[in-house]
Length: 377
Length: 107
Image (cartoon, rainbow over all chains, first blue to last red; front, side, top):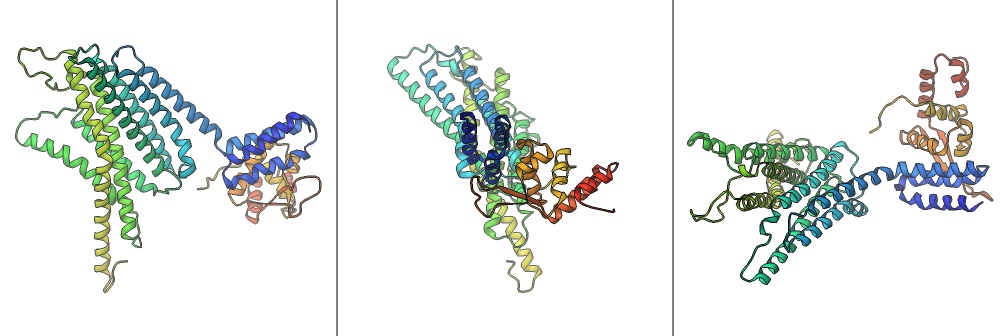
């Protein structure tokens, strides 16, 4: 056996490990029969076919394409974040933070696969994972856009104690980078976990939670497209507006639990119903927070002068509507939505658990009523 | 979930060869020679057939001298039925050939 054949055979022998356990026998079968193929080129073609089999069955090509797309999108975001417009001491830290987030998003699917396994074998899990990951990149794009628009507001700031001011800017940038890294990393991990084969989430729960979360976000966005409260006529229109703005999204997130629990048969335990409701609520809260933040901040960046001004200086002698003030207003309003990214999933968890268990409770009492002496379990 | 699709020409050729003597175990290179398929085409077909319960696979029991053990294949009873039906549907104009390949006489 010549050197090339030995090399390719060795490569195939190693590559077989990439296959899922139930597929490894097939790769080994190709390797085992290579010795029987007469002729150098025919044997090489046989072994190359084995490598192709591994690439196909281990989804190597798809994973390489996904990783290349992630790295490409990440590189584009880092390039956009490397704008010359910002010249303050926080800029290097902000750029380092973006690089760290991009690297984390690219590495996490590979790193988590060992613990979580591949994506669950159903359409809902694949759709939620793809949509969720695209939303993560969109969110990072929004953060970069915000940095490009408002990041320069402290440029060339002359402070009384310049050294102290610069130190504060730097430490603020470090904290900001850590928060964004933890936030986006946490979201990515939740998306990967709930859609993984190991977690084995019910497809109906994933679909109900994510779908209702997106609808709730669209309601909030339609009623507050620029982060400002609309100003309907005083009286009942105003009261109705606020009621719809608050109650409809909460109701939709609340409905995620019962909708998911609907598919639970009578034998499901209280714990199973709670788990299902909690997961549906988590999906709804996560999807809602992500979608509303992405849509609203994007619109704010497109129409910055339409965002309500937050008075930077209350003095009537100071001109308002300056670029600095607009940048401050957009940045401060966007920060509320970034805070919503932390609150959304937590609120969804609580509301979903409540919704899931309350429906389960009603069903149990209904079964108990139907069955004389029955306890509904 | 198993999707129901019409088998490809390559799949039909594999089924036809395996259906010639359904009780006999065949190995990959042997099938490749008879069907003219490359390993990168043949094995995915065998995997799909096995996933659908139409093919059974096992390793040779004894360790032969001078070569590794072979992975062996044959159609399951469902596989034999499916192969007959698929070949029948695919080669109606060439009925005699399909039947001969499957070892079916007189139908």
